[in-house]
Each structure stands twice: as C-alpha cells, then as structure tokens.
Length: 390
Image (cartoon, rainbow, N blue to C red; front, side, top):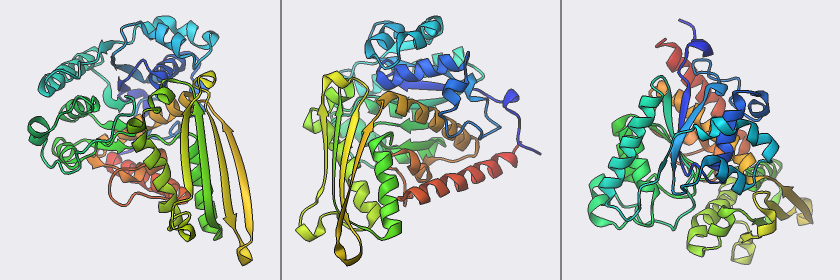
C-alpha cells in the first residue's frame, strides 16, 4: 500500500517543559500563526515536504508546563522575541493552549513523576487524535553525576535530584511512551534512561539544539577538513541578553554547553586544535549582555594554514535571533520523532546529529556532509518501515 495522505493522519501534540520561556513562547506563536498564515513558519522548516503519513505541520498542537504563573501572552510580551504586531492577532489561540504549573523540585521524585504523568494523560484526553511528543526546553542545569546509573531504581535511592528538574519529565514521558526531544545541554540520556526508553519502545533525540554559531562552526569545520586546511586556532564569543544568557553566567550551568560547543570541533577535524602549543586553542565564551535580549551576536576568529604552512584567517560575525533560530528546529524534531515512533524505533537516534551539538547514541555523524546524508538515509528507513504497515 502507498504512504497515507496528510489529511487522514494524526496531528502532532508538543508537550513542552519550559513552555513560557523564550524558545517555548516563540514556538507557541509559531504554532498559532501556522493556523492562519502557515507559510511564515513553513518556509523555515526542513521537514515541511517530508513524512506524508503525518498530519501537515499547520495542524500541530501544543500544551506543557512552566513555573511562571502569568498568562502565555504576558510571557510572550515579556520575552520580547516577536514584535507585538506579529503575535497579538493570535492572542486568543495562545491563551487557549493548556499549560500546567511545573512540579516542585523539592517534592519526592516519585510524586513529581506521578504529577507529570497525570498531566500528560490530561493533555492526551484533550487531544485524543494527536501523537504527543515531549520537548525539553528547561534551562541549562549543573552537570550531573549520573553516567554510572544503570537502573532507574538507583535514581530514587542513591541520588539527590533537586538540581535536575528535567529528570521527572523525562521519566514520565518515557513511561507514557512519548518520544523525547532533549533540546537542552543537560545530559539526561544516562544508561538507566536509555534502557527505560527501549523498554517502553520510544525514541530519544538530543542533546543541545544546534541553532546558530555552532551550526556554522560545523559547516566551516567540515569544509576545512574536506579541503585539508589545518585549523590552528578558533576563538568564539557569544553575547546574548535573554534569560538563557543570564542563566549561563553561572559557571556550573554553563559547563555542559561550553563543553558541547568546544568538543565537536576536535571531533570533526580529527585532531586537537592547538596541539602544537600543547594546550587547546579553541576558545568559547558566553557573556550576558542585556541590551541584546534574544538577538544574540556571535563572533568567530579562525586561524588556519594552507600550503607551506602559510597562515590565513577568517572573521565571522553572526547577528542572529536565538529563539527564532531554535523554534523551527523543535518543530522539525517533533515531526522526526513522530515518524520514528511510527517506524518502531526506540532509544537514542544518533542520525539526528544535524540538529544537535552533542548527538546522543553510538557513532553519530560528525561532519556536515555526513549529517545531511544520515538524515536522508533515516528518512528512507522511516518511509520503508511505515509504508509496509499502512
């Protein structure tokens, strides 16, 4: 049988942790806007013409959680990402998105999981025909020490998890058989969590959405490798003035993101940048600069050499919009996860490395060329698996 048509397929329901933050509220406006002028959003999606067995992107719904008790429209206005004339026509739709207060991190972990699972069931009841996808947009947290955790029971018995508010959402989503998108730099794909995802038959994607500076870093580094240029040093500076920028001024919370942004360069090139100096000359800095708001700026200075070892240099200045870059990727990933769920995939999906700074799973593609090729192959796999069951 052929692959089914958009019009007969289940819409996607995004269940977002951190729904009122900069990316979450931008995502909500995008979903509301698609119902009226879809092209304004669809033109930014890499999956817009893919997966005909899923409902069209403009049928996407949203629900979720946040610690902020204000209305979603008040949060959209406060975030300042989208001009008022673009979001205000959708105010009614925005305030109809069902959002719950996040569970208190001081609660017992089991109670938090139970609350989130009840919320998930409520959201599913409200959207009975939809395929729910869990989206983690919580702030960067401190690095965890959970890599040795092999069983979920150890999370309950051996660890203090107040500093890791993602954990109860992740567990509740997996135990509700929801595919997971971990867009944060927080390392949640520990062995116990991966085993649980396989047990419940649900796919995991992550970690740390690759939106602006790091996306172009991967593209350029892949080009340097293909051209056999030797990279001698790479200096990267990010300035941004949103809540993410303020949060990352805490060195403990910035550690994972900085590591993710730094390690991928050596992985792509196949050698340590700065090896002749005996110390890394790949430097990455993030500074909170309030005047920028969500419109972050990224500067890169790249020193490389060609024939005879003669030095050359590139300067790159990206003036981006953090959440405007991120929200379409979240929509793309949700569609990938719905397709992967239909195809019967579970556990980490390394082929989605195109979207992440630190892709989870074994042997993820590293260069830009390999990442694009992996997406094409994964799409073919999904299409073949799903068409055989329709």
